[in-house]
Length: 118
Image (cartoon, rainbow, N blue to C red; front, side, top):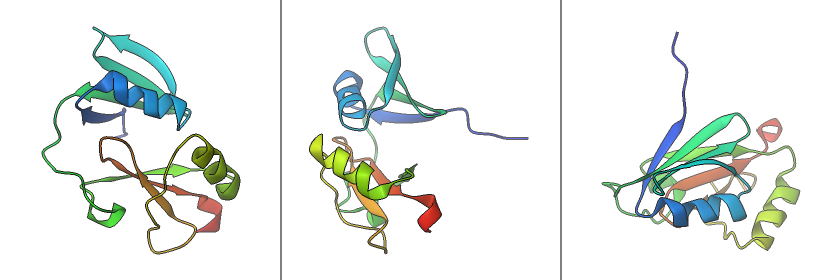
């Protein structure tokens, strides 16, 4: 049986990217290896920020990204307001006003939804 182990994102500067994930999104930093590889956690999912250059350029919106990462919340309005207060700028929606989209500083696209509203 298969299951996901963790998500790896290739970013130019993992330590800089980790600041966004920690300070804006509220992820927990768990380990920094060799001062260049950053392990983070959001709920039960582990995220690994690795040095690298993605082969795709930054897309203008969620629908044209190479991949999309979906974050769940049980209170979309409260979570969106808190993220905005921490400097997050939403980049539109994904077909519904209740499917908010945003990109991290490296151009990785995310969707924020309440799965109970879908």
